Image 1 (cartoon, rainbow, N blue to C red):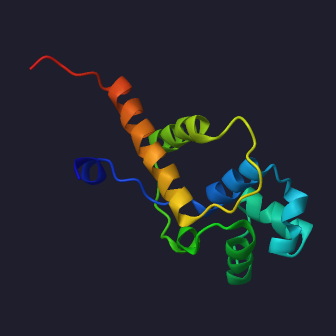
Image 2 (cartoon, one colour):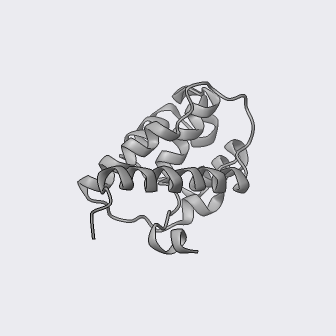
Length: 133
């Protein structure tokens, strides 16, 4: 499909997926202690100072329902423009009303990625209006 070729949408960053799930379920950092092991580990992971261990990943997959492929994906390097677009996209995607606790299935992440693709194309179209040929 043209969109998949021209506008590929990768998996979200593991930290972004955790933060998205926290926002979606209305969780606070202290409620993640059972998944990480201690309050200091939660703080360090959420601030980016500590990497996720395999045990933490397993706990998050089982407890929060985040697909394992999110944690196993190779991180890509981003430019400042990519980060700005990601922030803008996250603002469009994050729900304003907190959803009740439901595990986000692979289908849910696929729907999130599809919405992201649509919003990304719309943002690109606004930045790059059609020119006369």
